[in-house]
Image (cartoon, rainbow, N blue to C red; front, side, top):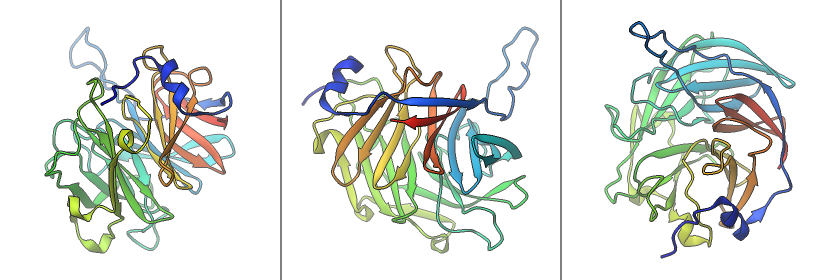
Length: 302
């Protein structure tokens, strides 16, 4: 079995490369500030940015544990419109991916329910790596969990963490994650596909391996080898977008684009046009927006 390449430069040789990417830095996030230190001389507890998605002219930005900020978008600007803790707020909720679905929990809701990846090595009360389905209130000041989705991983398909993302056009739910962990040389990356559960399916939905429409390893269906830290996910036009990296040599900022039909990988090196750790991705008016610890970047070309 082939092992992942050690150097990013070697990794890029075996895939389709994009033209040199260009990006604009649109500004810093305006999320929850760090908590003051518990004792004198201590360090403030930072709430790192994690999941992000866009619906219409709304952008939802999440922070570790389940802090949430809603922004209204206009052109290339974003203005804070609401801030709250998710219904799934918990020290073990990494809130690693945010992904809007297709159903609205109530008719007057400004946006459909959002799928939030727990994505933590420690299990939540409902299990490990669950997906919280949250309804954001019309006043953008609170949210509540309306459904929990759990994959019954009896075959130990996934290792450290499992991430979830919705394909709203096809009404599918994808799980993506590693088989061991980010640093093991034999680590691989699995994609599993389900029909998107409906809210009417109940407050708790358990998915089983036999429910999967697809279940495969990227490394087994293609010649591509990589070992990034799993961060954001987004499905658009039959492709899975995965921003990774922190802009350094050992951990370059790379946007991986996996073609879910052709089973091919495209790579865009974002190291020179972004900064800081990249977290999650969405599209707004045809342009790719990426949330990172240094703010929002709009990719003009990749």
